[in-house]
Image 1: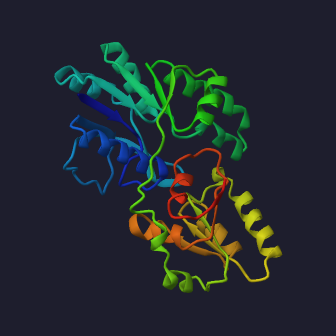
Image 2: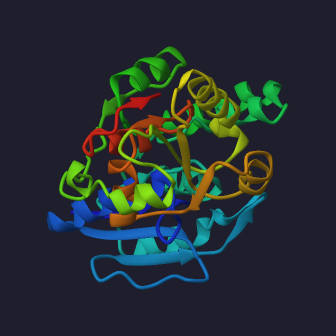
Length: 298
């Protein structure tokens, strides 16, 4: 089957949705599908040996220089899909590129599906623009309801979106690489680097250090645990931008380790004792904590 995957987040970006979509693309390719990934261009792009890529112009998001929105690119999509028509178009993000891809596929009569990864409409509440949240939800709903079906990660999200007027929802659970995320990767040397011994309680946060991730709640939760602990617990924050510098100045005793991936990320999970994840907008990260045996509070 010829499949065009439209996404405005994908490696080399480092975030939960990008990782999920890379696994999705890898799974489709490994099953013999002819895949084209259509996404914004990055300065450090590398060719993929497993699928074709159409790279389009985009621009960086304010406060997130490593994340890019794709320009609509309607004429490019029309030209290329007329030359090499896909059997199905799957739209994974709802930015300008995703919106135009849905419109173009519908106009050309190409079946189009979508997936829902992030509650973007809730971001406005964290930046003082709560009145725009409903307008953003209507925008998201209008995109997904034009497709033949929308994939969501859990029954809970399916229920919430159905209540908000989203139609034709199906569940595609996010898998976990159990060989990578394994309790055997617990690393005493890494714990000592954090100043932790066998008795030390180590708490972990993984994700972008951003206001919309509800960071104040995770800090309050750690401080509450800290006050009741006999031994001094350690707080490890995996992630970067845009709030890292502010948090580091306010809490110099926390351990800010930047972006981690692959085996390094797996060691951080396995070497921690409790995972804190306060965000109500993302769904991919908490699943990775189950396999390495790090219990989570979400």
